[in-house]
Length: 585
Image 1: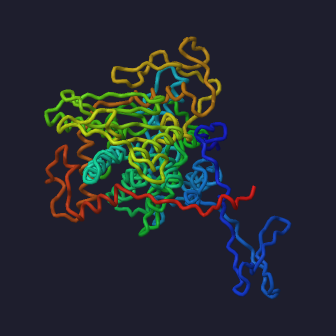
Image 2: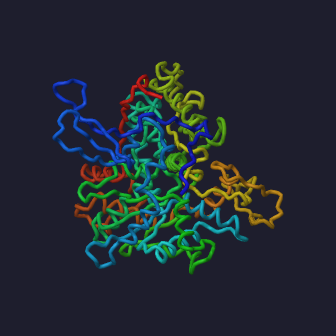
Image 3: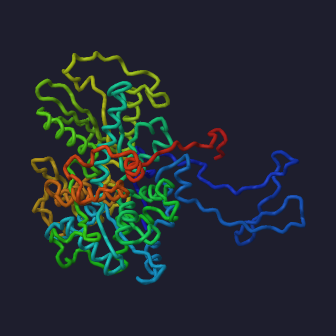
């Protein structure tokens, strides 16, 4: 099995040095009468077993010690690396674990049977699509790939259901905007436009903030990631419609990133009542590909009805939307969804706005401003920032603009700015950021460490044409194969981060985009909101006044509490117990 290459010694620009204290020491009793003296000592026999031997009492027998294991939760409490030690940490988050569960799962009808459900991210579908399209005469759409994955999961593995996570992402983006509105209302009462909100579905970024810059935690959005919202949809919402408890469902997700394994293991996403996680196991795109190879499944072979758009799953007669498109980036479109909401609001108020963008250093660090076309004032300023090198720059910028002590540049307050006259708005130079979308991986989620790597003989596009909206356009010249003589195709390396291969995955991602939000999406999300937040209310779902603003409505205190518990989480500072001067090399 190959593990994440996202942060390795060969990629020093985005590497965080591992800690020397990534261990779980054996607890040793200390004699009360001898401060600092150990009451026992550890002996090792000839075969490597560890024994605790009394230091003084010879009558006490030696006690064999269990082998210490580092869990995923221990990793999050470590003061060191984010992903460089993953090969040690994911023994319980692998495709072997999935196969073990499926082989030992009692048959349906048995009291011990658990319903197996799989959810796959759109970035994983794009990676699979790119790997197939590179050897196919015709590009394979993400919808076709989803149908083939669903067929594989049901026929070859025995899963009962297989979904994509784009609907969960749609819910996350809606809740993200609600949180952003609350954020702006809160900051306006203190110092308007001084504090930006930082949002991400990236657990690597969250771990980075918790371990190295805890002062940033108040800035970070608390909206759960699409993976964790999907986990709750499957175990809480679907489970009730299936008359199953969360413990009677086994949920597997396919993600582009190994750090998603760490995210799923957090105690925040654990059901204490039923003793189960929202996501039981996370496998990467590469691991799913390996599963298919082991089962002899050819993903390039068509399945029945793979191009039909009306084969979406239904949950108790309720359509579950699939491949819900969001304009913006392939990493979740957090920033662009905020821009879209604000633009719609301004236009409904009779204002006309213009969106401008500016690349700061590369396409991984880009700023966007929404301006009033009449006054020229900046209504909104945001940025997307991918990769740890750029993240360091953002940390410094936020520290300088907000004056938060503990962050680089935070000791010095931002320079005073002249306040414009009422109604004129601020210029792009004066206005600080309102919102920043951050990702740990350069190029974002399509370049996650768990994605499929290009083979050494695979040919990919050197340049990708863009459509009028700025998205990669699928070219009819994309054929791949050794007989392809197109001059626009170049030989690819198998290294992580190959720019040509990333463009190919991006192309696959945007070929399946659909225009607008299907009416069934709105109906289903309102049903979800009703079932989650209003289960005790007397008003039935069928009598709710359904319109575009329902999700943004303020509900009663009990309903808002349930909504917050379902869609939002919290972060905590990770304290290091390591004293740097005491580290022995």
